[in-house]
Each structure stands twice: as C-alpha cells, then as structure tokens.
Amino acid sequence: GQRTGVQAVPGCEGLGTSGKDYCRYPSLSYSGNNGAPVESFPLGVCQGDCDNDGECQGSLQCFQRAATETVPDCLGDGTSGRDYCAVRPTDTTLFLKGDNGSPAANFPLGICDGDCDSDANCAGSLICFQRGGTQEVPGCEGLGTSGKDYCRYP
Image 1: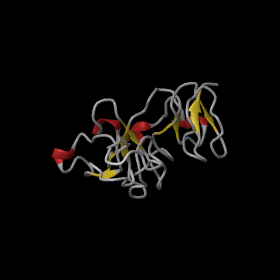
Image 2 (image 1 turned 30 degrees about the vertical axis):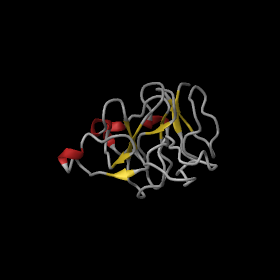
Image 3 (image 1 turned 90 degrees about the vertical axis):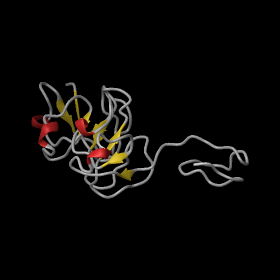
C-alpha cells in the first residue's frame, strides 16, 4: 500500500525516504482450500492453502509445510501446517514438497526437494541427504529449511 511520512515497510529495515513507496515481498494469505472457493484458484504467490502445484498459478509451486517453515520470498508465518504457492527460482533451489510421504502425489521427491527420510523417498538414483541445521546440500542452491533433508545426486 501507499505510505505516508516514514511509516515502516513490513519486511524492510530503515526509514527510507519520507513519502516514498517501496516494493516488498507479499505477506502469506489464506485464499481457500481444496479448490474452494473456485474463484480463488489457481492461487497466486504467497496464497494458500495449496495441496499440489496444479493449484498454483503458472510456474508457482506449492511449498509444503508441517508447521510455520519460512515460505521463500513471502512475509509472515501464516497458519501452522498451511501450504502456500511460491516462486522456486531454479530447479536446484531447495524446496519443501512434502514430508513422510505426504502428499503422495509429490513422492518420490525430485532433485533438491525435501523433506526426505530415506533414499526410498527420492526419485531414481537420487539419495536423501540427511543434515543438521542449514548444512549445504551438494548440487543444490539456498539454505532450505533448518533440519529438513533433501534429495540430491549421489
């Protein structure tokens, strides 16, 4: 929205220039679930609750969450366990696609997809890279979600 004076810009630091507006990442917002209301689908960036990539507009992907994991390029925590459509910059950017085999349609996981628990959760010859914190995943970009494990090439 438009700001007046040196009003704070969510997600930004500093005061900026008085009376000037600034672009920022959108906040997480709930728009619907399971395709309802129909006019809300496909969902836009930082909108939820999605169950699969097909419920997101264009090339957006459904970022699967168990709790309040940070959704890439979106502001806020949203509702715990709710999944949101997000931009995945590259196919090798770490991205949560599911957990414990759910949603089933996303398993086996692809390259740099998480959260895997064993190699069986990963497609083809990919292996599950078990990590602590935000340890770098070889062949993948970004930090991903702390404590989550991702599929990678052997």
